[in-house]
Image (cartoon, rainbow, N blue to C red; front, side, top):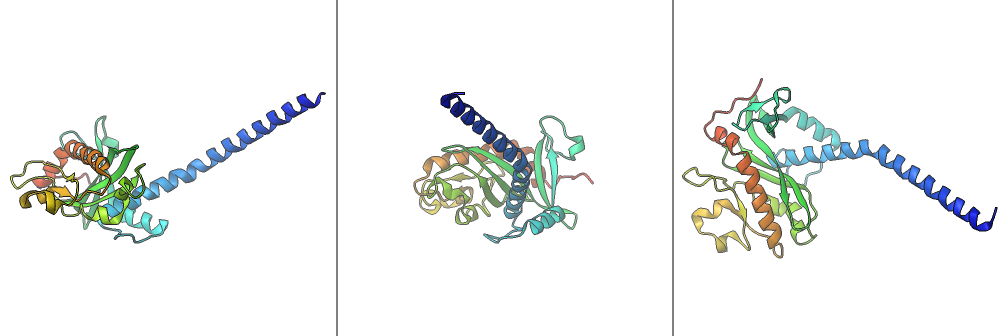
Length: 235
């Protein structure tokens, strides 16, 4: 056997072994990756409704314990009715509710929005009045660190708390991110519907504003039910 052939066989065998090892590692890690994603989503849902304050760090066990005790997932029909998973139909939307003493304190909608460099994923929580934002979190994005990437920071997310998605007449208006400071660009009576922008991240703010508006419009039937105090949850 020639030296060249031995070299080719060695290289081919090495590539095969490496491929098998990488495949095995990827397959073996999938379960752990899925677990980590579930914990991160649950942590962000808890943050959105205020059950985890600020940058407070909790163990996975505590996150699971609080989530299982306080949060329940339902599905929302196009008419705004809450149904359990076994009654779910095509077109129904996921909704996470914070239950306290059998009553709904807040509800959480998943956010999936276009960003400047990729998708933005997070959660937006509203109080049970169907009008007031209780919290906002981002758990995955591809925005530029120090610019659009600031959407994941606590200081930015706190600005959403207390904002209103309807005007004084009850008309849906959503909440948008402005360029600059709200107090400098928006008239007083409209400031409740806007959030301060991030310097150097105008496009990120524009895309996220549009994405959140679309999400809130989609969930408007159930928000109207909350405003009218006509939400009935499955027992």
